[in-house]
Amino acid sequence: MKPNSKVLIIAGSDSSGGAGIQADLKTVTSLGSYAMTAITAVTAQNTTGVKSITPIKSLEISNQIEFTAKDIKPNAIKIGMLHSKSVIQAVIKSLNKIKIKKIVLDPVMVAKGGSKLINDAAIIHLKKNLLKKTLLITPNIPEAEILSKIKINSKKDMIKAAKILINLGAKNVLIKGGHLKSNQMNDILLNRKTMKIFTSKKYRTKNTHGTGCTLSSAIATYLACGKDLIKSCELGIKYVNESIKSNLNLGKGSGPINHLNSIILNRKFK
Image: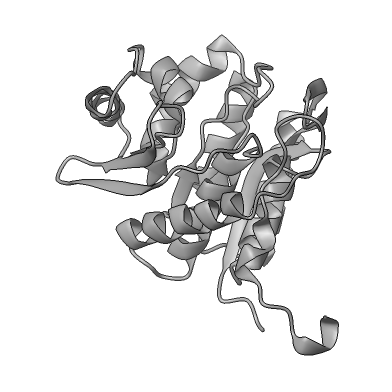
């Protein structure tokens, strides 16, 4: 199988392999595209939490983005963990140089274990300057609450928060509803013209580490392959749901999901 498209991932590394760059690489590869990376930070973490975060210098992040894209131009970009204002400034500068329109931003702010992954100055800069550079932003409910400055307890609140983000400059917002207490998942896609609610079954499991990273990378991959935004979101959500449904049980805390759910092994490898 040859890759159908190329995706550049700008994100942090997760040593446990469940989230961050590692989840992104697995997702893009499993869905049939070619993945490239620009690492923004190195974390020491496992399923129980984050032990340490080592930031990569802003200049080196820019070097990774620009030197990679100069040789192999991506069809889409996925952005994950950006821990400081200087990193966000460097990424914006590099994005202006490589001129890619299909950009998916997953505004990673807090790890599953509760560790903060971005500082307050960076959040302000992200809202003011990065939102408008992206095609889609994919916050979960805690992230949407931080960005919109409202409490989200219902679908109605999700829509209200999405509208606030649109008014801040986002072109399209997909708010993920996994944190709401309900028997079904409601993910809401909103822009200035339309709204689409994706409804799916909610699986009861503690093993959901890396779902946000995986979803944004899956959507970026489908966009890179030429699918429209609604179809890309629909297929990305389906991929994540199947990955959760597999219920891998690794580690003592919030375990990873199964990124290989989309792959059927060739008979000779079984």
